[in-house]
Length: 543
Image 1 (tube, rainbow, N blue to C red):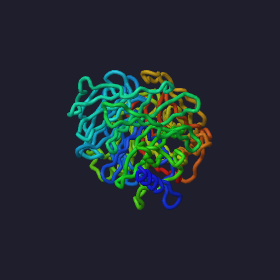
Image 2: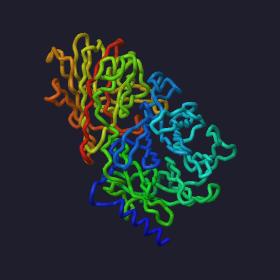
Image 3: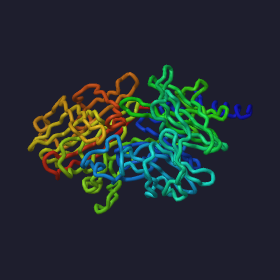
Image 4: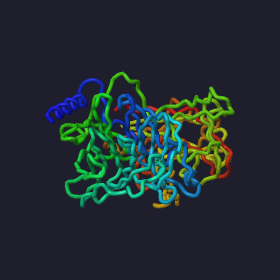
């Protein structure tokens, strides 16, 4: 035991350092909730929740737990309901949740269950030879909430899910072994919320199930708990492995632990941070009496950590794009979007192109809709802290009467820059928009819109047919998650417009995600118009 504790303490000193290159927490200051992380060889792979965004279940990879990039998606779209197409309702805050990622016998597996009732909520199991894909559907099972797939040493597959439930799957992963479903623990009396976000690992012959625990007793906080056993059919012990606030925000939990090639362990947990969403933190794991204790010597998430290795190229899950993928493609072929982009719900494939005007993203209107929240083909990327800026250049010369196109900080409450075509005139509006959704069906019942500022482009700049739009985001603690909005007619001189320090918000009852940069174009009268976007330029200040 003394040797075991010494090794853990030596590893801890390696993890937390005040010299050299540093990983600053949050490790990813962007919306990356419900992570699952595995290591295959020298590469870490991570999957996260993106709900109603498509393609879904992004696969991110890193060599050093510092520089992450998106390398693929588990699926391009979901098709169980027209809601995924923004027809007959929506799936805001639903869709893909809490995907489990595993590698077994030379193949990757991903298990996810949309947060829906009925057939829409059935569990998917996908598989692929490479994390980048292509992924294929292997099986559909009944709904397992916040589940994890687990392969034992002999290959026996299990699903752990919900609040302390588990079952054994058949070897082909296409069914549940009859009679195998059971509770493996009972929650404590003051844990009145769900224990969810289950992740299971096996280390030195012991099974560890990690879950987030919501407690409401005095002096108790949101925390990460761990249950362990040496026999899946035996009794499980419990311990609290992380109960830490961080960075001026409340307590954090839900995630997993993963080891390096050298046998060191790391904990990756998310924290709710307001308008930017749920960000990822990195902590050392200290194995104490056989428990994976997260945090520093005081059990707190550290402000900085030493990277696993040095010299890795810088990478990001948010990126600039000049839309040049179409310049090398035949007009008859569909050039792919960069993997940093996701559509709001399933896209209409015929209504966007990178090849019709090479070097530009063309967004066409495909059907008449009443508002932004029902608009097809809205294209998004995450916003990041502590501060970030995104800008686009848009050619609006082919808009039609009633078309609305622009750039926004997109969420249930959105700050929106909209070019509106009325007859032969075009105006730029900055507005605040808030969607109302039914709780169960997520149907759009209304959009409350406050127009803050209007610029009559056709009158002031009659020859203008393109415009630059910019949004700056500030997620520095205490700055109230502020967004500011700008426009330019030459890309050099910028004019601020509309609400100063518009407050971005996180609302779990509607979108349940952080604010996104979003590019949109929709028709309110007649389909057939289009806009061309020359680029998306992005900058994020160093953490």
